[in-house]
Image (cartoon, rainbow, N blue to C red; front, top):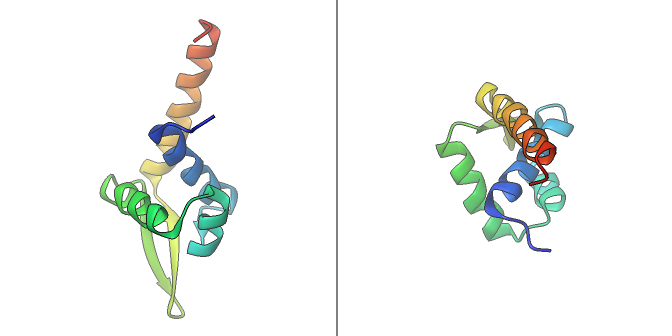
Length: 88
């Protein structure tokens, strides 16, 4: 079954969350199961929404989950629980 856009974005944020809130681009690529170009486009979108930010550490790029990103994951979980309670 194909993931919706929102599920894909959530999966990316969960991958970062599960790595302690910081992830290397290659790890995100594998965890999100996306092509490199698709991952870059979604990362850009997440950054524009303020859910993810980029950090350079020792010359290497890392993606960091923002407070807004953590809040999104909390609200997403709350919404899906609510929807499931109604059989949606």
